Amino acid sequence: MSDSASRFAGVRAFIAARRRFLLLTHVGPDGDGLFSCIALSRYLRSLGKEATVVTEGPCPGFTAAFDPEGLVRGREDLLAVQDWPARFDGALVLDTGKPSRLGRLEGPVISSALPVAVIDHHIAEPDNFDCPSAIDTRAAAVGEMIADYLDEEGCAFGDPLVVRCLHAAMVYDTGQFRFTNTTAKTLRWAARLVELGAAPGEAYSIFWESHGAGSVRLMGALMGRLKLECGARLAWFTLGQEELDRSRRTSTSPFPGASSRSRWSPSSRRSRGAGCG
Ligand SMILES: [Mn+2]
Image 1 (cartoon, rainbow, N blue to C red):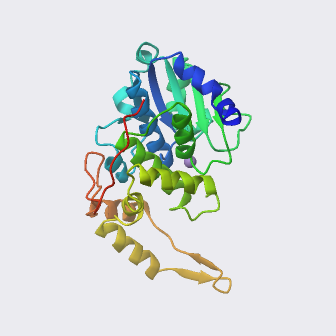
Image 2 (cartoon, rainbow, N blue to C red):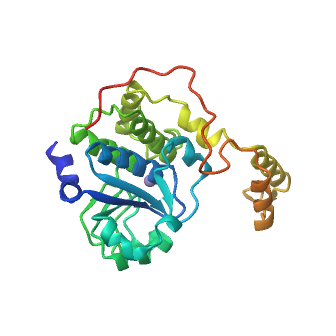
């Protein structure tokens, strides 16, 4: 406890001292960063605090399946930078520690002078934010760190969305627990989250089995023109922006936009735990 408690000590004090949070993740937001933000937001709200997740660009289509409330907002929604110091008490940056990885949000964050805290599992570098930081390169995902943090805080994980998001974040960054970053601890968290109600196949299905016809046809076209060189040790193809845009326009994906809802439905769900917070 003392080792892991010290890992979050700075972030814990940062959160305790503030009420209104802006949650940010890196450019090209992924399943770990986004769903860690959503899980932490729901937890902060359960404490009576305010939490707003903002991304600098479009989110992946799968976001909607884990964001029924529309917690994740686009940068354009909150572009009135001069309002940020009035609207927020601090920014929590997840899944990166670098200002430059915030893309077009870097400028607004810096100019707002909002206090920042970082929760990340990438190696800290000299150009990281100089701020309270919980950085654990042993964690398979930031979702695993958020699970640890909430656990230390006494969260009962009774919010089904928190449970689903944390499980999805770990599934995303471990490729459904196949990548070398997967540890026994990650698997223990996966088991616990399934006991708490996460469906083992939900996130995998949404991330990697829910591509629309346009995406499948594009993949077929790309594989059809695959070139092999260097004794078949090098495989390559080209893809133009226009072709990519066309495939997106003709996609019949169940997640064509952030407002759509998941078609994935679990065949059975386990009972939920007690309330969070
Ligand atoms: Mn990550």
